[in-house]
Amino acid sequence: MTGKFTEAELEEAIIDLFRQENYAYVNGESIHRHYEDILLTDDLRAYLSDRYQSAGLSDAEMKKIINKLTLINSTPLYLGSRDAFRLVNEGFDLARDDITKVALHIDYINFDEPEKNIFKVVNQYSVQGEHLRRPDMLVFINVIPVAIFEFKTAIEEDTTVFDAWEQITVRYCRDIPKLMKYCFVSVISKDIQKYYESCAEQGSKPEQIEESKRAMSKMRKILGHPDRLHKLAKDIIEHYEALCAEKPDVVQKAMIVCSDRQIAFDLMKEILSIREAWGIPRKAENEAVLSSEQLDKLLPLPKINLVATQG
Image 1 (cartoon, rainbow, N blue to C red):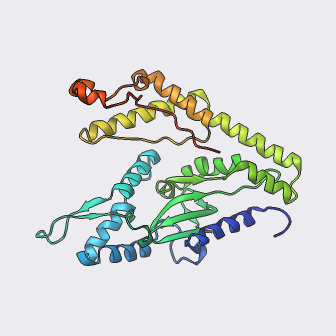
Image 2 (tube, rainbow, N blue to C red):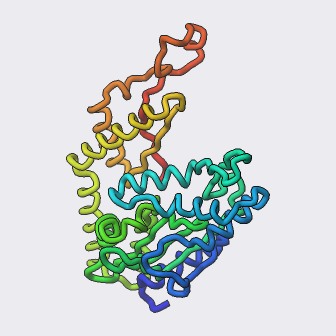
Image 3 (cartoon, rainbow, N blue to C red):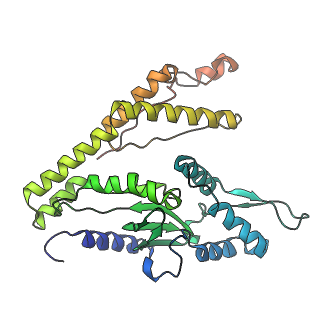
Protein backbone atom coordinates (compact mmCIF):
# COMPACT_ATOMS: atom_id res chain seq x y z
CA MET A 1 0.00 0.00 0.00
CA THR A 2 1.19 3.54 -0.73
CA GLY A 3 -0.26 5.28 2.35
CA LYS A 4 -3.12 6.59 0.22
CA PHE A 5 -6.19 4.60 -0.77
CA THR A 6 -5.72 4.84 -4.53
CA GLU A 7 -8.13 3.68 -7.23
CA ALA A 8 -5.82 0.82 -8.19
CA GLU A 9 -5.57 -0.36 -4.58
CA LEU A 10 -9.34 -0.17 -4.16
CA GLU A 11 -9.74 -2.28 -7.30
CA GLU A 12 -7.18 -4.79 -6.04
CA ALA A 13 -8.90 -5.05 -2.66
CA ILE A 14 -12.31 -5.70 -4.23
CA ILE A 15 -10.88 -8.30 -6.61
CA ASP A 16 -9.39 -10.06 -3.61
CA LEU A 17 -12.83 -10.17 -1.96
CA PHE A 18 -14.24 -11.84 -5.06
CA ARG A 19 -11.38 -14.35 -5.03
CA GLN A 20 -12.32 -15.26 -1.48
CA GLU A 21 -15.80 -16.11 -2.82
CA ASN A 22 -14.23 -18.48 -5.38
CA TYR A 23 -14.49 -16.15 -8.38
CA ALA A 24 -11.67 -16.67 -10.86
CA TYR A 25 -9.73 -13.46 -11.56
CA VAL A 26 -8.75 -12.72 -15.15
CA ASN A 27 -6.98 -9.67 -16.56
CA GLY A 28 -9.01 -8.63 -19.60
CA GLU A 29 -5.91 -7.99 -21.69
CA SER A 30 -5.00 -11.68 -21.43
CA ILE A 31 -8.27 -12.78 -23.09
CA HIS A 32 -7.87 -13.45 -26.82
CA ARG A 33 -10.77 -11.54 -28.38
CA HIS A 34 -11.70 -8.63 -30.63
CA TYR A 35 -12.65 -5.51 -28.68
CA GLU A 36 -16.01 -5.55 -30.49
CA ASP A 37 -16.81 -8.95 -28.93
CA ILE A 38 -18.59 -8.74 -25.59
CA LEU A 39 -19.47 -12.24 -24.43
CA LEU A 40 -17.03 -14.95 -23.35
CA THR A 41 -18.38 -17.55 -25.76
CA ASP A 42 -15.82 -20.20 -24.77
CA ASP A 43 -17.20 -20.10 -21.23
CA LEU A 44 -20.75 -20.39 -22.52
CA ARG A 45 -19.89 -23.42 -24.64
CA ALA A 46 -18.21 -25.08 -21.67
CA TYR A 47 -21.20 -24.37 -19.41
CA LEU A 48 -23.76 -25.58 -21.98
CA SER A 49 -21.78 -28.70 -22.80
CA ASP A 50 -21.70 -29.65 -19.13
CA ARG A 51 -25.26 -28.61 -18.26
CA TYR A 52 -26.91 -30.27 -21.26
CA GLN A 53 -24.51 -33.15 -21.83
CA SER A 54 -27.30 -35.74 -21.81
CA ALA A 55 -29.26 -33.77 -24.42
CA GLY A 56 -26.50 -34.08 -26.99
CA LEU A 57 -26.57 -30.53 -28.38
CA SER A 58 -25.44 -30.30 -32.01
CA ASP A 59 -23.04 -27.60 -33.22
CA ALA A 60 -25.95 -25.88 -34.97
CA GLU A 61 -28.03 -25.91 -31.78
CA MET A 62 -25.10 -24.56 -29.77
CA LYS A 63 -24.78 -21.71 -32.26
CA LYS A 64 -28.52 -20.96 -31.99
CA ILE A 65 -28.24 -20.68 -28.21
CA ILE A 66 -25.27 -18.34 -28.43
CA ASN A 67 -26.87 -16.21 -31.17
CA LYS A 68 -30.07 -15.91 -29.14
CA LEU A 69 -28.04 -14.00 -26.56
CA THR A 70 -25.59 -12.14 -28.78
CA LEU A 71 -28.12 -10.82 -31.31
CA ILE A 72 -30.22 -8.88 -28.80
CA ASN A 73 -30.51 -5.30 -30.05
CA SER A 74 -28.43 -2.72 -28.20
CA THR A 75 -30.59 0.26 -29.16
CA PRO A 76 -32.74 1.50 -27.66
CA LEU A 77 -30.72 0.44 -24.64
CA TYR A 78 -33.70 0.15 -22.29
CA LEU A 79 -35.42 -2.42 -24.51
CA GLY A 80 -32.19 -4.30 -25.16
CA SER A 81 -31.44 -4.49 -21.44
CA ARG A 82 -35.01 -5.59 -20.71
CA ASP A 83 -34.86 -8.35 -23.31
CA ALA A 84 -31.45 -9.52 -22.11
CA PHE A 85 -32.62 -9.57 -18.50
CA ARG A 86 -35.70 -11.64 -19.35
CA LEU A 87 -33.70 -14.10 -21.43
CA VAL A 88 -31.05 -14.59 -18.77
CA ASN A 89 -33.62 -14.96 -15.99
CA GLU A 90 -36.25 -17.03 -17.76
CA GLY A 91 -34.27 -18.86 -20.47
CA PHE A 92 -36.07 -20.11 -23.58
CA ASP A 93 -37.30 -23.29 -25.25
CA LEU A 94 -34.94 -24.50 -27.96
CA ALA A 95 -36.57 -26.19 -30.94
CA ARG A 96 -34.40 -29.24 -31.65
CA ASP A 97 -32.82 -29.91 -35.03
CA ASP A 98 -34.24 -33.41 -34.74
CA ILE A 99 -37.99 -32.79 -35.00
CA THR A 100 -38.70 -36.06 -33.20
CA LYS A 101 -37.25 -34.59 -30.00
CA VAL A 102 -39.24 -32.31 -27.70
CA ALA A 103 -38.12 -28.72 -27.19
CA LEU A 104 -35.31 -28.31 -24.64
CA HIS A 105 -35.50 -25.49 -22.10
CA ILE A 106 -32.21 -23.59 -22.00
CA ASP A 107 -31.03 -21.58 -18.98
CA TYR A 108 -27.97 -19.37 -19.33
CA ILE A 109 -27.44 -19.45 -15.56
CA ASN A 110 -27.95 -22.48 -13.34
CA PHE A 111 -29.97 -21.00 -10.49
CA ASP A 112 -30.68 -24.41 -8.94
CA GLU A 113 -27.02 -25.38 -8.65
CA PRO A 114 -25.02 -22.13 -8.49
CA GLU A 115 -21.73 -23.99 -8.08
CA LYS A 116 -22.16 -25.35 -11.61
CA ASN A 117 -21.78 -21.85 -13.09
CA ILE A 118 -18.53 -20.19 -14.19
CA PHE A 119 -17.85 -17.06 -12.10
CA LYS A 120 -15.17 -14.59 -13.16
CA VAL A 121 -14.11 -11.12 -12.09
CA VAL A 122 -12.33 -9.29 -14.91
CA ASN A 123 -10.55 -5.94 -15.12
CA GLN A 124 -8.86 -4.15 -18.02
CA TYR A 125 -11.63 -5.36 -20.37
CA SER A 126 -11.64 -2.99 -23.34
CA VAL A 127 -14.78 -2.60 -25.45
CA GLN A 128 -14.94 -0.89 -28.84
CA GLY A 129 -18.09 1.08 -29.60
CA GLU A 130 -18.51 4.70 -30.58
CA HIS A 131 -15.32 5.12 -28.55
CA LEU A 132 -12.95 2.60 -27.00
CA ARG A 133 -13.96 2.21 -23.35
CA ARG A 134 -12.45 0.14 -20.55
CA PRO A 135 -14.57 -0.26 -17.40
CA ASP A 136 -12.66 -0.74 -14.17
CA MET A 137 -14.14 -4.17 -13.48
CA LEU A 138 -16.81 -6.60 -14.71
CA VAL A 139 -18.34 -9.66 -13.13
CA PHE A 140 -19.15 -12.49 -15.55
CA ILE A 141 -21.46 -15.40 -14.84
CA ASN A 142 -20.81 -17.99 -17.52
CA VAL A 143 -20.67 -15.82 -20.61
CA ILE A 144 -22.50 -12.74 -19.37
CA PRO A 145 -21.07 -9.51 -17.89
CA VAL A 146 -23.90 -9.06 -15.38
CA ALA A 147 -22.26 -6.35 -13.25
CA ILE A 148 -20.07 -3.34 -13.99
CA PHE A 149 -17.87 -1.51 -11.48
CA GLU A 150 -16.37 1.95 -11.66
CA PHE A 151 -13.97 3.08 -8.95
CA LYS A 152 -13.17 6.63 -7.93
CA THR A 153 -11.37 7.79 -4.81
CA ALA A 154 -11.58 10.94 -2.73
CA ILE A 155 -7.82 11.50 -2.81
CA GLU A 156 -7.97 12.53 -6.46
CA GLU A 157 -8.82 16.20 -6.29
CA ASP A 158 -10.84 16.40 -9.52
CA THR A 159 -12.45 12.94 -9.38
CA THR A 160 -15.53 12.08 -7.33
CA VAL A 161 -18.08 9.33 -6.88
CA PHE A 162 -20.38 11.37 -9.10
CA ASP A 163 -17.83 11.03 -11.90
CA ALA A 164 -18.07 7.25 -11.56
CA TRP A 165 -21.86 7.40 -11.79
CA GLU A 166 -21.65 9.68 -14.83
CA GLN A 167 -19.07 7.42 -16.47
CA ILE A 168 -21.45 4.45 -16.38
CA THR A 169 -24.84 6.04 -16.90
CA VAL A 170 -23.79 8.61 -19.50
CA ARG A 171 -20.58 7.70 -21.31
CA TYR A 172 -20.75 3.91 -21.24
CA CYS A 173 -24.47 3.82 -22.05
CA ARG A 174 -23.82 6.18 -24.97
CA ASP A 175 -20.61 4.65 -26.30
CA ILE A 176 -20.83 0.90 -25.53
CA PRO A 177 -24.53 -0.07 -25.25
CA LYS A 178 -23.67 -3.53 -26.58
CA LEU A 179 -21.94 -4.15 -23.23
CA MET A 180 -24.35 -2.20 -21.05
CA LYS A 181 -27.43 -4.17 -22.18
CA TYR A 182 -26.05 -7.14 -20.22
CA CYS A 183 -24.92 -5.18 -17.13
CA PHE A 184 -27.94 -5.54 -14.88
CA VAL A 185 -26.05 -4.19 -11.85
CA SER A 186 -23.88 -1.07 -11.72
CA VAL A 187 -21.60 -0.52 -8.73
CA ILE A 188 -19.77 2.69 -7.95
CA SER A 189 -19.33 2.49 -4.20
CA LYS A 190 -20.24 0.51 -1.10
CA ASP A 191 -20.66 1.95 2.38
CA ILE A 192 -19.72 5.58 1.63
CA GLN A 193 -19.07 6.57 5.23
CA LYS A 194 -16.60 3.73 5.86
CA TYR A 195 -14.99 4.57 2.55
CA TYR A 196 -14.48 8.18 3.65
CA GLU A 197 -13.13 7.01 7.00
CA SER A 198 -10.67 4.74 5.24
CA CYS A 199 -9.58 7.60 2.99
CA ALA A 200 -8.99 9.79 6.03
CA GLU A 201 -6.95 7.06 7.71
CA GLN A 202 -4.85 6.70 4.57
CA GLY A 203 -4.04 10.42 4.52
CA SER A 204 -6.73 12.10 2.42
CA LYS A 205 -7.21 15.79 3.20
CA PRO A 206 -10.50 16.91 4.85
CA GLU A 207 -11.24 19.27 1.96
CA GLN A 208 -10.93 16.38 -0.53
CA ILE A 209 -13.40 14.28 1.46
CA GLU A 210 -15.83 17.19 1.71
CA GLU A 211 -15.59 17.76 -2.03
CA SER A 212 -16.49 14.12 -2.63
CA LYS A 213 -19.44 14.39 -0.24
CA ARG A 214 -20.67 17.48 -2.09
CA ALA A 215 -20.50 15.52 -5.34
CA MET A 216 -22.60 12.75 -3.78
CA SER A 217 -25.15 15.35 -2.73
CA LYS A 218 -25.21 16.65 -6.30
CA MET A 219 -25.81 13.14 -7.58
CA ARG A 220 -28.76 12.69 -5.19
CA LYS A 221 -30.26 15.93 -6.51
CA ILE A 222 -30.02 14.61 -10.06
CA LEU A 223 -31.42 11.16 -9.21
CA GLY A 224 -34.19 12.57 -7.06
CA HIS A 225 -35.25 15.50 -9.25
CA PRO A 226 -39.09 15.60 -9.35
CA ASP A 227 -39.23 15.71 -13.16
CA ARG A 228 -36.98 12.67 -13.43
CA LEU A 229 -38.93 10.73 -10.80
CA HIS A 230 -42.23 11.53 -12.53
CA LYS A 231 -40.94 10.23 -15.87
CA LEU A 232 -39.51 7.15 -14.15
CA ALA A 233 -42.82 6.48 -12.40
CA LYS A 234 -44.72 6.66 -15.71
CA ASP A 235 -42.20 4.34 -17.34
CA ILE A 236 -42.42 1.78 -14.52
CA ILE A 237 -46.23 1.77 -14.65
CA GLU A 238 -46.29 1.50 -18.44
CA HIS A 239 -43.96 -1.47 -18.60
CA TYR A 240 -45.48 -3.25 -15.60
CA GLU A 241 -48.99 -2.98 -17.01
CA ALA A 242 -47.78 -4.03 -20.47
CA LEU A 243 -46.21 -7.15 -18.94
CA CYS A 244 -49.44 -7.92 -17.04
CA ALA A 245 -51.43 -7.59 -20.27
CA GLU A 246 -48.94 -9.75 -22.15
CA LYS A 247 -49.15 -12.56 -19.57
CA PRO A 248 -52.59 -12.23 -17.91
CA ASP A 249 -52.47 -15.69 -16.35
CA VAL A 250 -49.25 -14.96 -14.44
CA VAL A 251 -49.21 -12.91 -11.24
CA GLN A 252 -46.54 -10.29 -11.93
CA LYS A 253 -44.33 -8.85 -9.20
CA ALA A 254 -41.74 -6.10 -9.35
CA MET A 255 -39.04 -4.77 -7.05
CA ILE A 256 -37.67 -1.26 -7.44
CA VAL A 257 -34.30 -0.59 -5.77
CA CYS A 258 -33.41 3.04 -5.07
CA SER A 259 -30.16 4.67 -4.03
CA ASP A 260 -31.59 5.96 -0.74
CA ARG A 261 -34.83 5.97 1.27
CA GLN A 262 -35.87 9.52 0.45
CA ILE A 263 -35.70 8.88 -3.27
CA ALA A 264 -37.60 5.61 -2.76
CA PHE A 265 -40.34 7.40 -0.83
CA ASP A 266 -40.59 10.21 -3.39
CA LEU A 267 -40.76 7.71 -6.26
CA MET A 268 -43.55 5.79 -4.54
CA LYS A 269 -45.49 9.05 -4.14
CA GLU A 270 -45.06 9.76 -7.85
CA ILE A 271 -46.36 6.30 -8.74
CA LEU A 272 -49.37 6.73 -6.44
CA SER A 273 -50.10 10.14 -7.94
CA ILE A 274 -50.62 8.34 -11.26
CA ARG A 275 -52.18 5.12 -9.92
CA GLU A 276 -53.91 6.22 -6.72
CA ALA A 277 -55.74 2.90 -6.44
CA TRP A 278 -52.42 1.09 -5.97
CA GLY A 279 -52.16 2.63 -2.50
CA ILE A 280 -55.58 1.47 -1.31
CA PRO A 281 -55.35 -1.70 0.83
CA ARG A 282 -57.25 -4.57 -0.74
CA LYS A 283 -57.51 -8.28 -0.01
CA ALA A 284 -57.32 -9.28 -3.67
CA GLU A 285 -56.97 -7.75 -7.12
CA ASN A 286 -60.63 -8.57 -7.68
CA GLU A 287 -62.36 -9.15 -4.35
CA ALA A 288 -65.65 -9.90 -6.09
CA VAL A 289 -64.44 -13.31 -7.26
CA LEU A 290 -63.72 -14.51 -3.71
CA SER A 291 -66.19 -15.77 -1.15
CA SER A 292 -66.69 -14.12 2.23
CA GLU A 293 -64.93 -17.05 3.86
CA GLN A 294 -61.91 -16.63 1.61
CA LEU A 295 -61.79 -12.88 2.18
CA ASP A 296 -61.89 -13.35 5.96
CA LYS A 297 -58.59 -15.23 5.79
CA LEU A 298 -56.78 -12.43 3.96
CA LEU A 299 -55.21 -9.21 5.17
CA PRO A 300 -55.76 -6.04 3.12
CA LEU A 301 -52.56 -4.76 1.53
CA PRO A 302 -51.77 -1.96 -0.94
CA LYS A 303 -50.51 -2.95 -4.39
CA ILE A 304 -47.28 -1.00 -3.80
CA ASN A 305 -45.38 -0.51 -0.56
CA LEU A 306 -42.07 0.73 0.76
CA VAL A 307 -39.55 -1.64 2.37
CA ALA A 308 -36.49 -0.09 4.00
CA THR A 309 -33.35 -2.11 4.71
CA GLN A 310 -31.02 -1.47 7.60
CA GLY A 311 -27.92 0.61 7.10
